[in-house]
Amino acid sequence: MFKQALTFTSLMFLTSMFFTSILVAQSPADGTWVFSMQSPMGAVEANVVMAVDGATLTGEFDLGNGRKWPIEGGTIEGNKIAFSITRDGASMTYVMSGNIDGGTIVGLAEAMGTTAEWSMSRSN
Image 1 (tube, one colour):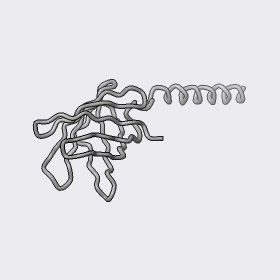
Image 2 (image 1 turned 90 degrees about the horizontal axis):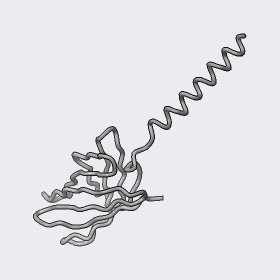
Image 3 (image 1 turned 180 degrees about the horizontal axis):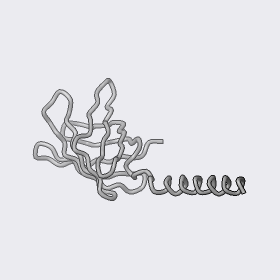
Image 4 (image 1 turned 30 degrees about the vertical axis):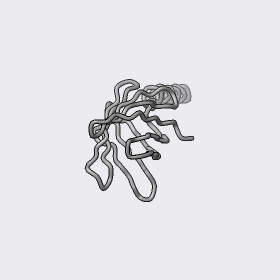
């Protein structure tokens, strides 16, 4: 009888862990991305790490040589993301929006009255 109760309890625990892992699935934005944008000031490329907690998107753009731009005011709704980044050493802030489609994100950046297209691809 004790073995049956222990087996049943173990089975219930494993089942609950399985379903919990399904419910806490990763957001499509979570992970590491490679960013590219052609701006009026030249090409911008960065490695980007993003994480989602509820509807909040956080992360950082790493441009190399110690230059890092944190994601500010990030949000996610379904496959749509929005956030701002401020260039280091400048007062320029990009207001970014994009749509996630599998391993790619395509969007627009607005800054100083101009709009530029950007893209990200999931890093392997």
